[in-house]
Image (cartoon, rainbow, N blue to C red):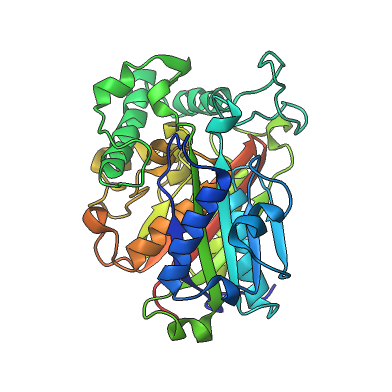
Length: 397
């Protein structure tokens, strides 16, 4: 397959504040995110030649986007790929530009989960992919219980005392909440202590309530164009190095599955690294935004994404490797932990942070001299997951 490395660039992005946005509609969020992106790129809505909108439950068909932005007679498509929905919208726009189908495209992700009354993302049935029913009593494998299964097995496999394991998880929550306290667009902007996280009520052992991301509303948008056109719009475009989707097929029912990794994370990231020409991700990636739906998943991702050896994530947590001042800062904006997870918006919100960091415009949470950034999403259920990895850089090779 031909690589799209350095053929497409992001020239504008927008992101709303995330939170319980009772006073704003889906349309309000779309307009706010899109017009920040338009202004950032120096383009008008009429310049957009094609668009994709990602949402799980906050709109149907392309009208979700065309109505509030008043797009007329251009190709617009609604996409959904569970937690990778926003990243899927960006991937579609990137590939359309790379294929020559259009020169300027918009990707939008939006969700208003608070309006639905859900206390969390809709769970997938253990066997199929149908959503949990309206009563909340239907049999299902909830998101906290899925990651709790992984955490318990991981701690057993690597002989980590559960209390120590919970402390490692708590350090991730503390890190992300510190980063979120520096971000005015985050839903939660309060710092936490390790003791607060460890003493919080348990949701699914060993995962406590402060190990979980929240439920939020929000939207984010990106404008992409051909790489050779990018500097006609802005002086500091961000170039796409790779964008991949890896979808599994019920790994969890295979007898050999070990429950100490997620295969889609491993394969999806490896494919992205190959396409981007990255041989040593630990050294070559400057910043990453990963899918910290639960603190344990972020811990597992340090290994699944090839940044440390199996069973060794705890050593890097203790060393501060993934903090703002560490060797590989992760979730510098606060992550899902502080933004919550409005499903359609999260992937593009992650890219918004990487975009700002690579441009040197992240304010008090700016990392030093970043060159390459990665975003990662994981959706679905364990063994039937959807993994998205996108790698970008501030230089074109």
